[in-house]
Length: 485
Image (cartoon, rainbow, N blue to C red):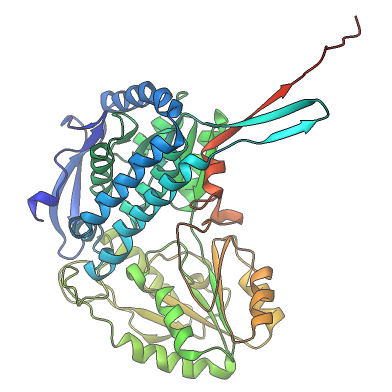
């Protein structure tokens, strides 16, 4: 990895890089080769305490600033991220294995969008005036205090900003713990924020496994926890936060449906299925991995899909021509191989792919199963890899019932030329984020999040402001106050 793109220590605390080599060593492995490219140390109790103390010390003064002043810092950081997009994209590729073709247009740019959007919104955070005759009530929208962000490994730069930007815009401090699988990118986000003028202590990044996250979630000084991760992790974090009644945002997993009606534009539907299953090598929480295709067009859909997948360029993620990269880790690759074996055992028809590539790194072929039934494991459980399950349907009411028959409710999509049907179907989806003739768009202006086991709360948009602030109500009596004695 080019030296100038690397963070210089394991943690970023109180405005500076911080190292404590007594913490457990975490190896950073480049998914394209399996080589160790960096090592960081898990946060010790001393590092965690330094992060907590500096965050608490800095937060009140930051909250007391005007929204315009806070927003100016975030907008400057956004400009800096865009100026450094190449280096940040290279780091993201080394951290995750995602192709540079993808990281250069999605990851740091999406993070910059969040900083710019919430930077612009910061000055507009106002309360409400409620007239009650001659008396009146006003509300104040106030910061929560200290927020903890816990990230996933698939979008380390983006998640660091999706959580940090609204938290900071609202006057909070944040301590962010990236996934131990992808620990590098969030450090550069912290570095840029500080360079842009963010006072020291307001955005700290510390490394570690679940124990580090757990110690912060249960700390009485923490007011809010925002997690992106799996449902099992979400259950634990939500329960721990509930002990001290902390605010929470949970962005968890999914097994999202994508319904393709027989009047759909076939090329667009295949594009949606590719984006919803193979972008980031399938490692996206909102992916539409249950693709319900009308029987009338199923074989045409599968033929076109198989042909399009031949155009995937699998190779060195740093090559701009590469469009499909490795899995993030050997462990994740093995999990996905287990699901592929399960799909074959349970009788699904393997249309294409299904094997590990004979090369260094953690590469799997893009894999498509057809003739999948609702009770198969690959149709029930989140795989988080490049595996698509294609299911047949004929009737709209039937496919809607099947689409919603899942504990998850993160995303859902429909492809059809019938506009009435499109809106009827999305109204019927039990999912928080839906798409019509598209899939996996995530503009910062739009709320993102799920229902059922897929989470609670929303990220992005004005909705995120509600999750990083609390309302204070003030009743003002203009006349004399009566009492019974």
